Length: 193
Image (cartoon, rainbow, N blue to C red; front, side):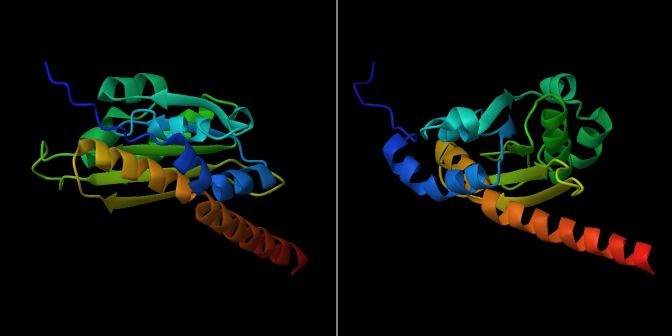
C-alpha cells in the first residue's frame, strides 16, 4: 500500500477566484446551467458547486459515461455515435440538447472526449464541447460546439476540459446574444419591407 497522498485536481478556493467573473456573468444574465458530462465525469458541475450561491446557477448535472447512458438518459442517437464517434461535436451537441430537454435550466454544457490513446482514430486529449442556450426574451435558441486537445495525464486533461467549458460561458453567451439579435433584426426588416 502506498503512503503517497493522491494528487488533487480540485482546488476550491483557487477556482472560486477564477470563476468569480464567470459566475457574476451568469448571475447578471440569469443563466441557470445543466451539464451533460462524459469524460469530465461531473467536474464541470462540481466546480460551479464550489462557488457560493451555486444553487442559483446549477439546476442539475448528468454524468453519462457509457454510450447506453448517453442514449437512454439524453436521447443521443445510436446513428450519431456510429457515424461520428463518441468523441465528436455531434455527440456533444445531442448531449447538450438532451440535458436541456430533461431539466429546467436555460443553458447546457456538454463534454465528451478521450484522455488516452484507446481510440487510434482520435488523438489523446481530444475533448469535444457544446454550449446550448435556450430561447428567451424572443431570441431563438443557439447551439455552439468546438473541439480542443489538451495534454497531460488523464486527470489533468479532465481538469483542463472542465475549466475550459466553464470559462467559455461569457464568450459563448455573448455570441448567442449577438447572433440572436442579428437574426431578430433581419426578421423585423423583412416584415417592414
